[in-house]
Every structure is written in structure tokens, then in C-alpha cells.
Amino acid sequence: MSNTGQRSVEHEIVISAPAAAVYRLIAEVENWPQIFPPTIHVDQVETGVGEERIRIWATANGEAKNWTSRRVLSPDELRIEFRQEVSAPPVASMGGTWLIEPLSAGESRVRLLHDYRAIDDDPEGLAWIEEAVDRNSRSELAALKTNIEFVHGAEELTFSFEDSVQVDGSAKDVYDFINEADLWSERLPHVATVRLTEDVPGLQTLEMDTRAKDGSTHTTKSYRVTFPHQRIVYKQVTLPALMTLHTGYWTFTEGPDGTTASSQHTVVLNTANIARILGPDATVDDARSYVRSALSTNSRATLTHAKDYAESSR
Image (cartoon, rainbow, N blue to C red; front, side, top):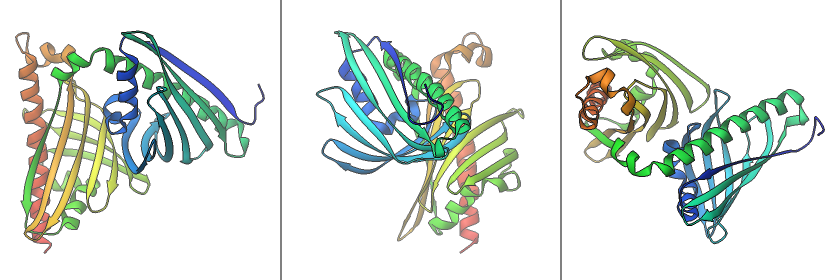
């Protein structure tokens, strides 16, 4: 194969689930941050009959990227075609197809096809893309298999909740407090240290050391996507021991009586660590209560300080 020009690659996996169920999961992009490890957030920009335009924020080789794609959905053929409309360097063009093939009533083969080019057919860029496509494709297919095959067990381990405060102030001021996470170690007592980078406007990498109720600290890393002054969505990629997934968003809704500021969390528990962290007799319900209490305590503290900041800025 030449070192320049367009490349094509195919990955596949066999999943113990009906083909129609697999197709639906891939088609519903709002679930991708919970399903696919590289995906941070997906927005539907436009929708039409059998077509849609989506914007995706995801990691590739440890770097956060975003791009816009068009998809053609063919449910009768169990086929989804995609093409990046605006690619992120070093990608010049990227597209492909999801193909779901029924093997039996309860088993399917998922094929993921990609074609791509590097900017100026640069060999280093091409090698970077090849590695990213291979890593992300294997990760996405493995996660898809796990999610489908263990969906009933995951329902017990997955939960969401939300905390809100009413603020006598503007949405912009509350948003600014949450957005300026580089100042949290000065503003929030439960944050020991913080490191925030934003190489691409609106796409942040946030690392921080947070103090727990018992005085211990733990380090987390998140990618955040900001939408001034309405919401900030995030996905944690370095997680505490009791979680295998943590995504969430902050929303800021301004009305005639002030602003409603909310923090939402979606969590999947890590059952392998429950006994080690909470004791041999601890249950899934105990772990759920512990995680919810810990996250809510920090969220409510952050929202309260954001409320004070916004109301003092009036």
C-alpha cells in the first residue's frame, strides 16, 4: 500500500444481541458518551428524513478533538453511513459505515469501516490517524459489545440525579464561576489543586485533586465542552474507584425571577471495588448511596458558591 493517499480499514466484532437492538444503540447518538469511551459529547445540529448532522467531541490518542459529521441512517438495511464535514487536523477527510449483520436471532456481527486521508498526505499525520482510528474503533466496538450484552446488569448499576439552586443573579455570572475552574482551588474548599487547559476555545481539560469527607484527596481528570452561557457538559476519564463511568452537565436557565443553576450526574458503579472501599457486607445500594452523597455534596457546595458569586456581582 502506498504511503500517501486515501486509506481504508475495517474492524468487526460479534455481539450476543439481536441486530435491530444493536442498530438502535448506534443510531441514538445522545447515548454515545455512556457507550463509547472516546466520546465526550454529541450534539444533533440538524435532523431530516433518514439524515442528520451531528457535532462530536471525542478523544483521539489522548487528545481532545471535535468535528462535524453527516449521517445517513438506513434502518431497513441496518446500515449507517457517516462523513466528517469539518475534520480536525491532521485529518483531511474521514468517513465510513456501520454495518450490522444478523448471524442468528440473538447474535450479530458489527462491521465498522473507515476511509481517511491526512492533510497534504503527510506520512506522520497518516500514521497518527491510523493509530487513532485503530484504537478508537477497537475501544468503541468492545464497549458496544459490553453495553449490549450486559444491559440488564448495567441497568441496576447505572443511575442519574440532579441538584439545583435558585440564584438572584444572571446566568452569565453563574456560568462564569463554573467555567473558570482554574480558580476553584481559591474559591471552593473541597478543591485542593486544579489544572485547567483550553487549547481549543470551548474544549477544556480539567484535572483536580478533591478532598473527601474523611479528609482524603483523590485526583480526577475530565474533558469539558462549554456552551456560553447555557451549559457545560463533561466526561470524567480518571475516575474514583467506585465508578466505571461518570458524565454530567451544568445548566444555567435565566428567567424573570433569576437563574436556575443545576448539576446533573450519570454514574455507572464499579462493583469490583465495593467490598474493598465500603467493606465486605456492602451492597450495590450502599455504593449507590455513597457515590450519590459524595457527588451531591460537592455539587451543592459548588452551586452554593456560584450562587454567592453571582448574587454579589449584581
